[in-house]
Length: 189
Image (cartoon, rainbow, N blue to C red; front, side):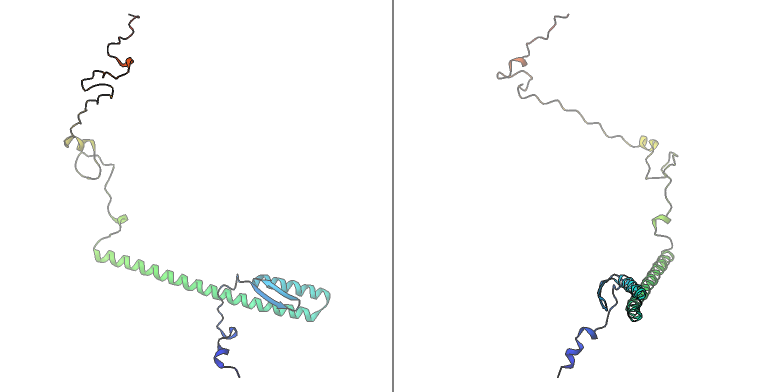
């Protein structure tokens, strides 16, 4: 005799979760062999088989194919109802969360005595040029004249080249064309 616990663990007694039935691929064992596809594809196939059986005059086969088609229609309709119910539930939860956020914002605005939202705060007029210190964010030329200017940097003397000494005279191992006594060509004078 079988143990009753093992019977409870079988696949047939599990709660069927509709999950993603709409896109799930089924293998249907119909009277004409296996039909494989999503519920909508199986419905279409059984409807086509029912039309073919009707044209051939087989009323029993027509009824059989229509029953198979109806089974998958019910499966698909149930899955779509559950999907719509989940979507409505999510939309309701989203509306409730948004309403709660709006209420929290309104409460914070009331308790703070003012708005902490930067878009609600008064903004300085960046284009105003009145010569005064009305806006610390915008520096005007008039304000720049009142402030002391930084001292300019002194320029340093250039470093001597490697073939010259500290006094600028050429070193003995310098190239002959770098000699200071070479006079420039003054033939044009």
